[in-house]
Length: 456
Image 1: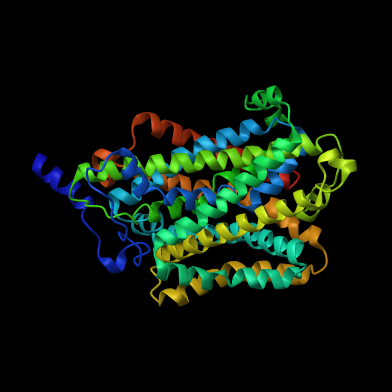
Image 2: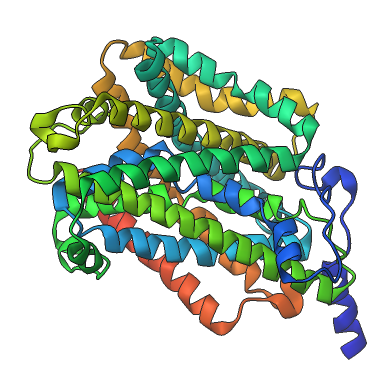
């Protein structure tokens, strides 16, 4: 009996067929050193966490976080903190699922649910990808408009062509993609760290803001923005992406010690990069609070923020065109890095859920067009009315929060199953925290839906 059980568990860790591997062209393509010390090993595993982290600091975060600071000062910093901790827990589970099983979350859902439920979850996930792309594409297009006076619709089309850049980068190797995205992240961190430094926020109030307040649940506007921050911070598509790109490192699934090492270093990488994302999101909210709280400035659009940063009547003596240009540069960096990871996620989801078989270039083009087309149609329909176009951003982040449980629940279920994960199944403490997070998200999202349609 014991031998049969061990055989069953060993089957879990068997190498999958190359054609069925997630992101097969880069799966297991990066070798990691053996017995080379902690830091050299960590360096070899560093990279996937950067791609995950950019999804947690994409342009969709900007409006919600800055608006949260402008309206409620530092109160919502606690939401940023809690969201980031949840993200760390869930991304570690996503990476572990990919490393142990050799399959991504989309493939696991397809194999372990009915056809009907699989289709429902696929549709919801595709909509979440589209919601993510709304923020990324519009953010990039507006940055191009602010920097180079390129019309918004033209900017959206240019951004849609990013898929061609991704195809080229994939030819050069996955490490090149990781390095480029890491460079863009550094630009974002430096820009906002500098702008917050100039804003001189109250340090004691910042620390107090990380303590949760009951007013978040009782104030409807605050709750709505809080869920927008959650949706912008804990990204559903990142769970699918994390379960896939954790497999880019070469793994011997017949060696449990090798699996354990891969889980350990991938999790460390993920937590380091998500800590950087937490810092960026905190900086965004702090910037909104320090510069705009109590000013009654209109901050519903990126162009409003761009203009406000050079208006002495709003931000005082630090106002300058340079601050505005830096803001636009950071926005473009955020949008571009996020579109790369968004396109990869689209491929993973389409391949995993419906087992789509077509050339890689065509597959990426199809997934990109599925996401871009609705945004382009909306932009054309509301041409000249940027306020309505950008209103999509906050709504898209709230939708992501609503879609999140449909990714979290399968993830926690599979990573807690010993038949699937063997000895790498979730410990009791992580299971409890993950299920608690999922339940809280479901309850809050149901409340948000009822509130939004005006029943309470």
